[in-house]
Image (cartoon, rainbow, N blue to C red; front, side, top):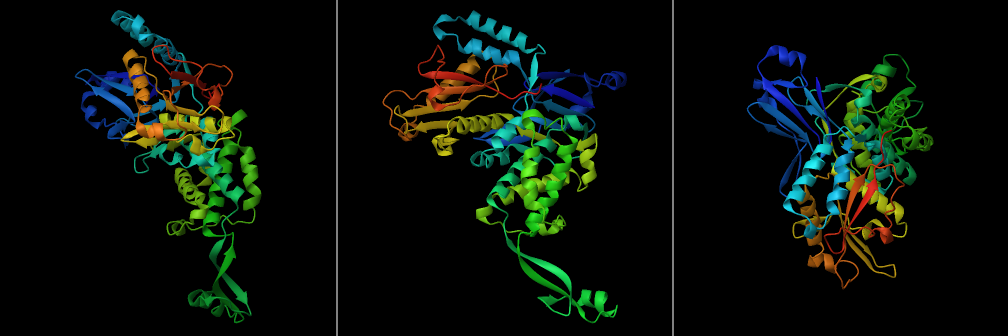
Length: 476
């Protein structure tokens, strides 16, 4: 039995010992004795702070589950799971626009409380839009400079009991498939790695490499094939263990994409990537021993191989190494979580590179750190006539609480006063402008992230602090 939450929405379970209530209304009731089983999973620890996949407040009469920074699925108790879907409430996003536009000098404590009450009321409305995670990942993985940061987007617990779901509820598999195919596309673009690999062959009237005595006796001596010799020798080429493994995973991914077109339609169509990869692997075998993968040594020049093989192992494990499972409607999944604020950061990073073809990843200084502080981006452009330097902070989760929003703004403004930030990039005499980038779910024309167009919407209560809402891809 699942409890389905949207991002940033709470769900209350009433505690009881009444069997009939729990049996007939599992969505609303929970046995008292099961509260000891509820242990929210920790996703990461960052800058001394623990981040949990969901929050849980337990009182004498109820349990309040609150989704926060992550989407995914996990066990709540031994027989009930929690599923947080990537759906955002439009009213929460709109409230940020309203509250951030208010000048501190013109607002009273009563006005603040009224804003918060109104925003909280609107947040309960079921006006939601589902974010297209696959589209976001495709955009992120299109840039090699950004793809290397995606290894910490995902948490999977392979040891836990799998959770029964349908293919349409599955986010893990399409996420892994897209990431693998984009990595494989980079590998194909660069060219397959060549290396020495062993071949075993029953040669006629000749010997090459070393003779395998056991197989020679069994295959040839006992059968009176005295002119044949079973030999093992090395060959230098592309049909290596790594490439055979990648070919096998590629076949799984191809089968999955063909049978789950609902994930990969319209802008998410990745059939062109599959067709781009196919010719390169036509002469590569898909027969591979899984144990050989454990002892591979990776060449730094072919750095994509290590990550692609890691994701490939996840995909094969996901299907229990059985390709027919890629077509089933009812499936099961290990507990997993996706870090949405981190994904939003990388999506913005991809937008920067897309809309600023004259700049490189180095101009955006992703996760610029100093004295325990970490900026999402420090944009530096010395090439233009106007020297540009902007401190950028991305906010995927927007709370409607007035004080929280302004604390975030002040924190960003504080980053701009750090000496290390002032010394980095072009020297600017005036204050370094600050920018908060947040998501919008309106069906408006896409906003440009061109460096010259970022500072157009100043926040009233602050000097040189700006905001910019960018459209997220949505599932219609």
